[in-house]
Amino acid sequence: MKKLLALISLLTIGSSFAQVNRDLVLDGEKWLSSHSGYICKAFGTQVQAPSQYASMEVKFVKLSTDYTLDNALLTATFKSEESVCSYSALLFADNDASTIKLLESNAYALNGNSDCQKGRDLIDSHLSFNHYLYWGHPHHVTIMINESSAASICGNGASEIGIDFTLSGVIRN
Image 1 (cartoon, rainbow, N blue to C red):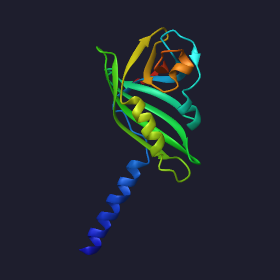
Image 2 (cartoon, rainbow, N blue to C red):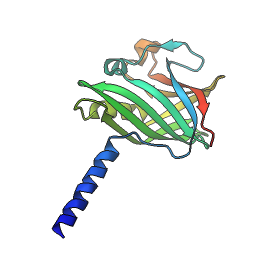
Image 3 (cartoon, rainbow, N blue to C red):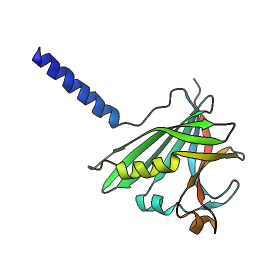
């Protein structure tokens, strides 16, 4: 009996560890968009990455949504210590209010020993609750984040920089 309980405990710990070291998944993923840089406003030119993102080599990969456009998955990578970390976040968009908020995130090291927490905390803080812009053809979704280097990048008085994504495909089932 003790061996059975020990085996169950080991399997539980193992499955918990496996869950931690993988990206989140969006059920019903339908619309795909690729990261197309940073902008200060809709139809604006691309600008440099926020200073905190540049120093951590943050690279946003994609933003995808389900059919309703309400539920979204954002993926990225960043450097933490000597590790490359994978980041994923599930977001909820209120399309009537043009706001988007963080529901859940995960980050883990693809290599090395970092716990990736510092980078996760930074990106989570920027994604906690924002407005977004939906504009252009091809369609863009730009998540406007409050960022300390916004004024130096976007001009005096600016407090936000947009993480811009461009529609790149659809998953057909």
